Length: 168
Image (cartoon, rainbow, N blue to C red; front, side, top):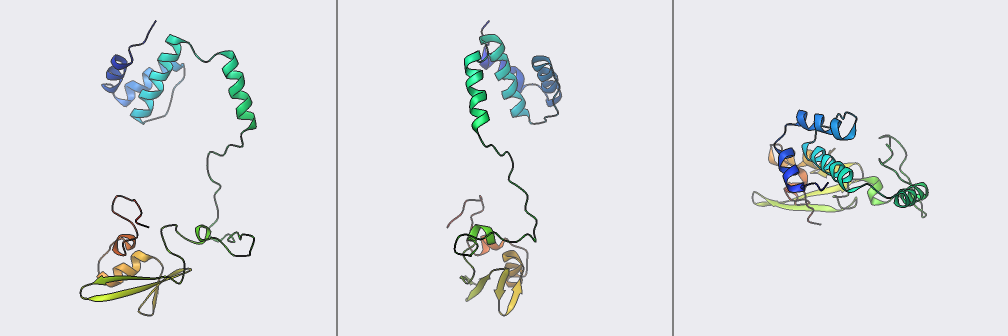
C-alpha cells in the first residue's frame, strides 16, 4: 500500500495538536507529550511511510547499531557553574570563548560610537564595560547610561544586527 504523502500532509495540517497526538498514538502505539505541530506531522508521516513501504532492513539496523556503539554522542553540553574556574589552554591563558560572550571583542578593546554629536568610547573589560570611569556589568547597561533608555548594547555599538546575525 502506497501512502499519498501530499494528501496525508494536508489532512494532518488541518488537525489540531490534540488530534495529532491521538493520531501519533494510533500509528506508534504509544502516547506523546509533544506539542510541536510540525514535529508531530513529520513523525506521523515518517511512520506511515515506514509502515506502508517497509522499515529498515535487518542489515541496515545492525550497521546503525554498530555505528551508534562507536559514536561518542553528547546530546546536551555539560552545565558549568557560574563561579567554576575558567579552563586554560596550553600556554596557561583562557581562550576568548571561555571568558566571555563570543559577540564581544577581546578585553582591552575600545568600542566607539558617534551619538548625538559626540564620539563615545566604552572599553571592554574582562568582567564588564567601562564608560566615563564607571564600570557596568553589561554592554546594555552601558548603553542605557548613555541613551537614558533601555537598548541592546550589541545593537547600539553595532556588534549584532536586529535579526541576530553578527556583523563581525
